[in-house]
Image 1 (spheres, rainbow, N blue to C red):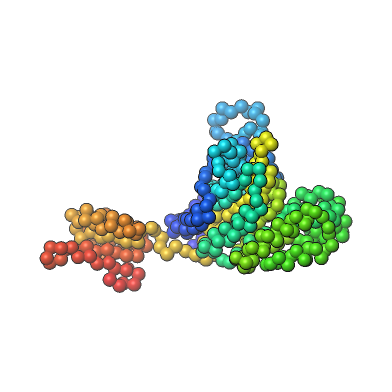
Image 2: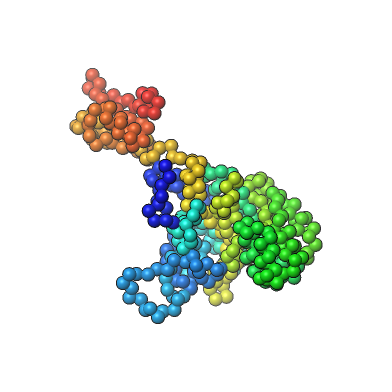
Length: 426
C-alpha cells in the first residue's frame, strides 16, 4: 500500500524499509574501507558564500534561520548560514582547514544527509542521504585516481541489490577542446547547454547554442555529433578524430578518457562506458566527469555522479586537486522499494524469540539469548510466560522466524528446541 509522507520531500522509512537502506549503507561502507578510504563527517551548516563559490545552485540552498534570531540583519548574504546541498564543497573546505593534519593523497568516504530546496518528485527529495568517495592531493594528483574511482564505484554498485547499471564517463578537457576547435569560445556555456540534452532533446539544445551562445548551425551540429558518441571500449577515440577537429586540450582529454575506458573495459566490461554527452552542470569539474544510470530505469536520472576538480580547494598558492564520486542513496532506495525490486527478509532485526516456560525462567532465557548474540545472531526474550501458542503468535506478528523453547527434562536438565514458524519444522 503506497504511503504519502506527511511532509513532502522528507522521506521516512518503515522499519523493514530502513533495513534495506541500512544494508545499502553497510555494503557501501564495507567496500570503501576495503579500498583504503577513511571516514569523516563534516558539519551540516556552511556559510552561503562557501556554498555558492562554484556552480549555479543558489536556488537549491536552504538557509538557516532561528525564530528568535539575534543575528545582525544587516550581515552580508555570504556570511549567512545554510544547510549543505552536497558533500563535495564542504569537503573542500575541510581539506583546506585541516591540511596540516591530513596524509596526502587523502582518501575519504563520507555518508551524510544533505538538503536541497527543489521540487519533490520520484527520486528527488529535499532531505536525502549521499555516500561520497574522494581522493585529494597536495599540489598534484596522478590521473590514475580517476581510473581507480570508476573501478571502486563499479565494485560498490555491483554489490548492491539494484538493477544493472552503467557508469557513463566523459572528460571536460575533451569537450572544451573540441568546442574551442570548432570556434565556440564560451565552452562553459556550451557544456551547460549540452547538459540539458536528455531533458530537452537535440533540437532544443541546437536552438540554445545558436540563440544564447551565437553558434552557427554547423557549429551546433558538430557539438551534437560529439555528444552522440557512446562506446563500451576505446573506439570513441577514432570516432572523435573522424570529426576532423584539432586542439591540444582535446587531445589531452582523449588520452585521459582512453585510460579510464581502457582499464575499465578490461576489469569490469560493460559497466563503465564512454558517453560524450555527459557534461555535469557544476562549474568546478575540470577533467573526468561521471554519471550513472540504472538500466531500464534511465528516467530516474543519475544515481551516482562526480568528477575531477583541480581548483575547488585552495589555500593561497597551495592547491588541492581531487576526484570524487557521490551516490544518491535515498534516490536508490526510493526506486528499489517503490518498484518492489528488493525487500527485507524480515521486518525486524531479531531472528530468534526465546520463550518463557514460566516467569522464573526469564533469567535462563536471557542466558540463551546472550549465547546467541555472542555468535552474531539477534535475539529477543519474551516478556511474559504466556501459553506457547501466544508466544509463537507474538513472534509471527513481529516477523521473527525462529522460536526457541527451553523446558525442563525429567532428569532435571534443560531441553532446548527451536521451531521455524515459517515452515513448521521443529
